Image 1: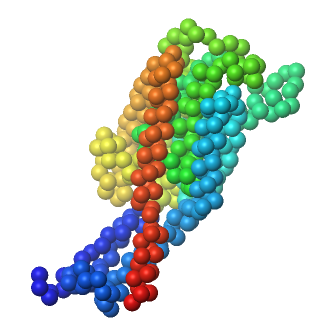
Image 2: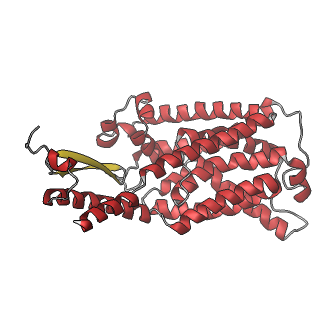
Length: 364
C-alpha cells in the first residue's frame, strides 16, 4: 500500500439499524500507536457513536438498579420453585399484573398497542385477571365465590402453557435481558406459564393443602390426550376466530405508515424471513406494497398459526405424565432465553470501549 491513504468504513448498529461512518485515516496511521490529528478525528467519530448507543440503552432502562431488580426476580422465582412451589402462582400473578401495565405503556409509546390483541398477550391478561380474582377471594372469602377453577380449565391452562406459549419463547427468540421491562414482559408471558403449571402439576399436594379447592377438587392421574388437548384447543379456537375476523375486517390494514399503528402480523413479516418466504413475500413487498393486506395472505398466515399452535398443544400431552420431560422442557426454555440474553448483552458492551477511546484522546 505504501503511503497511499486507504479509507475504511466502520459499521455501527444504532437502534436496530446500521449507519456507515467513514473514518478518513491512512493505513499507516491506523496501525501506528501515536494519536495523530487524523486519528483523533476517527476516534471522536467512534466515541460519538458509542455514546449514542449508550444513551439508547439507558432509555431502554439500563441501570444498576434495573439490572439488580431483574436479577433478584430470577433468584426469588427460583427460590419459590424449589422451596415453596405452592406460592409460585401468587408471585406470578403479581409479576404479570405489573409487567402488563409497564409493557402496555412502553408499547403504546411505540404505537404498538394492537400487539395486546395477540394470543400470548390476551392469555396473559386473562391469567392476571383470574389470578387477581382468586387472590381476592382468598383474602376476602365469601359463601358464594365469584370464580372457581373447573378441572377442564386447569387442563386447558396446561396445554396452552406448555404448548404454543412455551414454544413461542423459542420461535420468537425471547431473551432474558434483566434491565429491560419490555424484553422481560415479552419473555414472561411465554415462559412463566410453563413454570407455574410445573409447580402445580408436580407439587399438587402442597398446592392443594395451601389453597384447598382453588384449582379444582382433585388431581386425576388417568388423564387422556383428549382431556388435555380439546379444552386447550377450544380456548385457543375462540381467540383465533375473533382475531381472524378482526384481521379480515380491520387488522390487515394497520401499519405505521397508513394508520400509525403496528401489529404483530406486520412485525412478523418485517422481521421473519421464513414467514415471508412461506407467504411468498419479499422484504420490499412488506414495506413498499399492499400485498400484506391481501385477504388470501392473511388467511394463509392465520391457517399456519392454527396448525402450528394445534400441534404444540398436542405435544404438551407428552409432558403431562412425565416429570422428567416437563422439567427438561422448562429448563430448555430458560436455557434458550438465557443464551439469547447473553448474546444481547455481549452486543451491548459499550462503556468499556468508550473509556478506552476517551483515554486515548486525553493522553494525546
